[in-house]
Length: 283
Image 1 (spheres, rainbow, N blue to C red):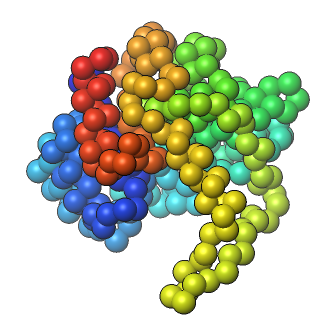
Image 2: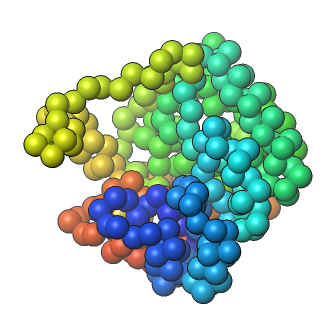
Image 3: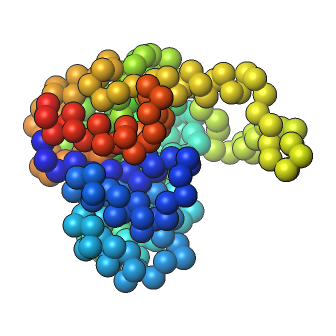
């Protein structure tokens, strides 16, 4: 496997690399393309283009929330991006899933003029069931296949208890991108929030520097979630089967590494280097 891309969110927050630094680092590690998680808002598009050219990588895709989609599409089109996915949004019923589908269809028509396909990226909550179907199914079945496709995050899908291979085959032709996220266990589908309810943000006490103090139970939850992000090739996902299923249902599927956490006491850059090394050797 040679064309392996990197979601720039994967650098995490343990370093202070700029967006341009991340692009350069992705190229140095051997990734052929990058998927943006915004971060380019204050940068002239020419600066990002130059960084991509110097790093020898392509801008293949991006994660953009609905609220920024319209303003970001022209910028991303100039970079050569062809697939833009909403990374997440709140919805917890079949009816709300259909509302999300309407938004994707709207942006799909808008993006068409830029040669961009609009998509959606899952976590675990999209596999919550309402009216006998996964919420993700309701979204996929109510979107226009001509302008809307999907990015299956195999790590979160498998964590929800879904077999990514079966799910890709179920929606053959609709899967434009695969998130390669190694996962070590099943936690089930989180119950998502309603898109019509006010977002609930927990209130934390602040330390002497004004930073939130996370309660022990919150720290434990994040620690347990981080443990799911194991070394590439050591988890529960059959990556050869995923690639075979994805390639069989659509041409030019994007493969994007997204890492949520480190493993084995290693730093994030080392983990990302080991991710691509395993993929090139085994896929």
